[in-house]
Image (cartoon, rainbow, N blue to C red; front, top):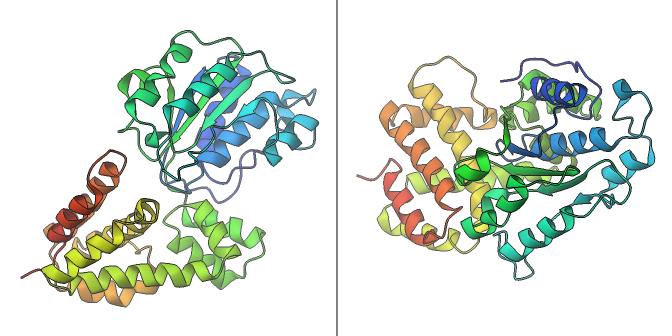
Length: 337
């Protein structure tokens, strides 16, 4: 984890100081790559870092050390999302979570054009793991023969769903969870009281974006508590109850991904407890339930449940049968006699 609670730079990024230093060094040495793959957990700061990098590259302040200044026309447009040279793919109007090949081709065509007003045209693909192989292939020509002014920023929770040909042509930036102290300092700066900042920092599992949303939307904690209660109820359910839950949960893939990411933190905490690590659990408000469960679940069972949850999260980026995959997960979770 990042361990610094204070900023060592002026970029609008909290944590990830090493990544900021690396990118600033690339700019200073004129060694900016044409493609960057930002990998890390949801809400850990991938989009914030990518946008700050884009802002810095196109900032017009005469002093390079001051970039991004945050005040010039280019910086303001990047912050508002209205910069004509910051390209974002159109979402699928059908409501599908996948990134369609048509959207990728559209961006590939646009980025080949000269910038309207900036140094670079930058295409930012959030959730690039949702692009199927054919859609990813549509970027290969741009990666193999990139225009001098074109940059691709690909964001993904994991590099596993990304084609090796794309990874090999990209600078991979793996973002680690941010330290509790850093997130606490961020929340205090945003107006949280000390108790709230400490609680949200622990519950965030190292994700500044999640902590900030939870601060702005207090009902997030209630929804989170309900989601963990669902998991605890499942562990006490029989085959029929678990399969019924699998049927219900399979209907909303996007919601399921968020749910599993939360459950993943729960199983990580349980692994910490069953292995006697002595480390503080992230789900502090669930400490009593976790302690009780740790008395009934073995280290091997907790680890198997964590791995099964991670495996399902990877499968959800493919065309796997969601309900069937969920049923397999339910069988992998402990508690069935």
